[in-house]
Length: 209
Image (cartoon, rainbow, N blue to C red; front, top):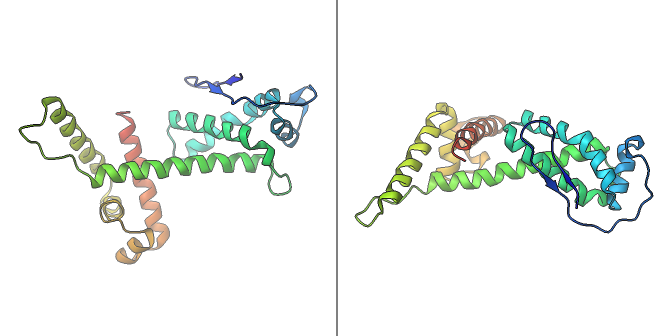
């Protein structure tokens, strides 16, 4: 079983799924990215280590430029590289350069993370905790009040324009195009405000994770 970790910041171990491999041993550092992906598709773990060392730090930096925090970027980089290992056999050099292919995988991992967070955040915002009652346990009341306070604090960090699109998206379940029409804004402006709002809200909630 192969284990790798990014060499900057706290290490997170990446463990590869097992795969039967057939290949001739060569010096992987002398191979092109395309050749490495071909060998990874055949199960060459040494080739994967080479591609991991070439790309994982760059993928992490790319994800941070997209807005991911350092810890999230490292996790997503590991996730993206696992996808490279699993999907290398499907790589087609005629359709994309290796670097483009790897970074598209990373970008898609980031988009998937944002979608999951949006669903979770929408649930938190649209489903306030139940009203306190005589049957509510003291510890549950403390947790409930803490959640209420964190939601309020998170929303307070947004600009009025960002709170507006968050309310329309999460509380009223409007699509981006519906919000744009309602506010007489370009669709790109609505998406930009929501993206910035999610980045701020995610950074706020990471303090408690």
